[in-house]
Image 1 (cartoon, rainbow over the protein chains, first blue to last red):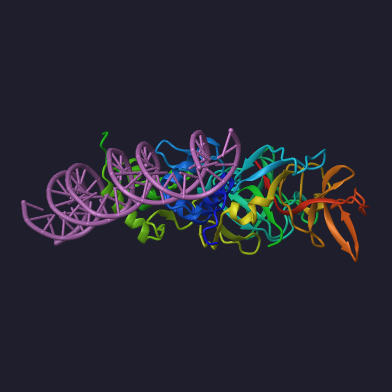
Image 2 (cartoon, helix red, strand yellow; image 1 turned 30 degrees about the horizontal axis):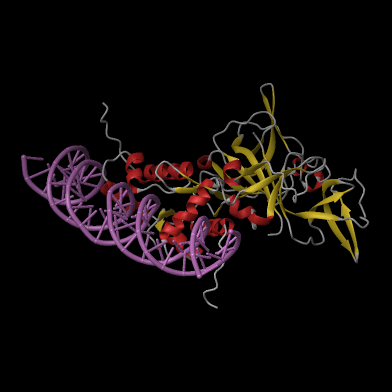
Length: 198
Length: 198
DNA sequence: TTGACAATAGAACGATCGTTCTATATCATG
DNA sequence: CATGATATAGAACGATCGTTCTATTGTCAA
């Protein structure tokens, strides 16, 4: 029974191309698609790709290169918690996001930091969270910034009172700081990321 | 002065290829690289690509396709806040992360949710945060889950006391819940994402 | 059994790929 | 000026790309 024919479906083909894309970081050629879906002719691939194109799953750019219409790593944005949240089974979906694009506006001037300490605990920033810091950005009142205070780098709220600047922790244990001359600001916190189940 | 010659550097070429990759979701061909870096011959591109290859910036897979050794959207992980945090100027960097890969273990069984309400405020999960929920995963003691309680979907700590299950908010305003028959769990919270400056 | 349709195989084709070669232009150095 | 190194241009090449064509196979209904 080695030649048992399996009914090929659009979803199968899509999944296999998606898997290839995740593994290799690029779209497969027609020859490669032939291999991964188990056919021996490129014309068959052409046949299936045409289906994926008219189904709106794949698209071609101006040069004829294939790409997914939606990022295959993207997640469905399912709604809001609390008020009559639609069951995931209903699949009433709204949007799609790629975190790399969503979180990072300027990759060249941004960097990551692992949080130590509890000075921003009341702002929902905990130990071991990752924060995305953007350099070369002047802070506005209320921003969370990364600054050097007494030789240590720490995160604080940036408060501007008239001409004066106050650095304020989001933890009542720590008193506000009125910096003297040497206020060094490394950047502004743009995002916070926390991962459970590492 | 239209033919003013600009000194071409490796960094320039890398940046332009990176920009193309971000815009198009794929690597450019040699002809396209010629266009974007402003030369008229593919052999010149070959020259520069060879430099990028030996510099460890690009690589070739088994089929000869180009790719970046590191995700061009990835950020530098600069260290830890607080204790002698190395200045970003020093650039003593440690690692690199792509958030899509870092946060999403099983794209097919995960979805996104925008948080409403303050029931998990003490766990550092605020209104308008995005949470990544993974379905088909049975919760363990201490996990944060998405559950249906009294017809509303909400997030709670999942506590197991012997055979009994308790759902506990991270906010003293809300009392713990001991569910009766109908405990519906949509999934387990795998990650939290918060973006400032939208 | 026959006919219609869908899926596959295989060959041929022009276009474009990346490579390699030679030749020219620019610039710093002695 | 002479020289060598570096960067660019342009042409030629085999390989592979995706497309298109014809032919074969398998399935299901009449």
